[in-house]
Image 1 (cartoon, rainbow, N blue to C red):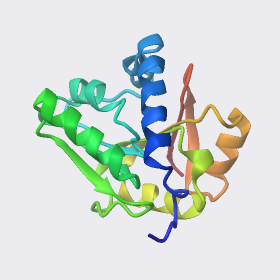
Image 2: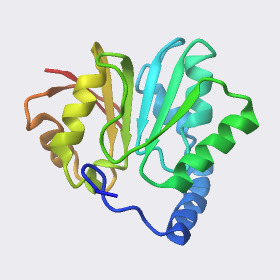
Image 3: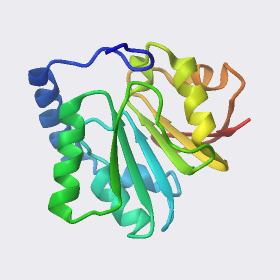
Image 4: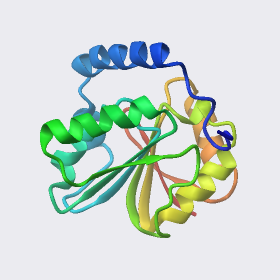
Length: 180
């Protein structure tokens, strides 16, 4: 598969080890705490770009409710399988997986919130991905970014450098951007 936006998929073993480490991380710092900073509301349409093993799916489902929608995008097939298992186990009918390394396939200006968590540092073509996220975000939509592999200034520069986004607010753990 041509890797346009996201870096090459990790091996299945590496992915499973990462997923296991995320379970420990999520126990120490529940994902719900992080999502509170974003301001997600009932009925929102959320894109979890680079969803990994689906750590945010359960908490997102609680926030958006049955009337909301969650799109989980990742290039790794195991990530999407894990998200599908979470959705099945929790009876979530509003979760859709998207296999991709860049393009979402979603209509323009259809998403309220995009989560770009611990993915920015891995993108081989940040500009292409940011253009796609800009395209799918509603005019008042929020791009929420968190990447512990990068310094805050690097994140802000990477996201705002192309002129598509501007910094909206800084949370305790996340940076929120809006369309410029």
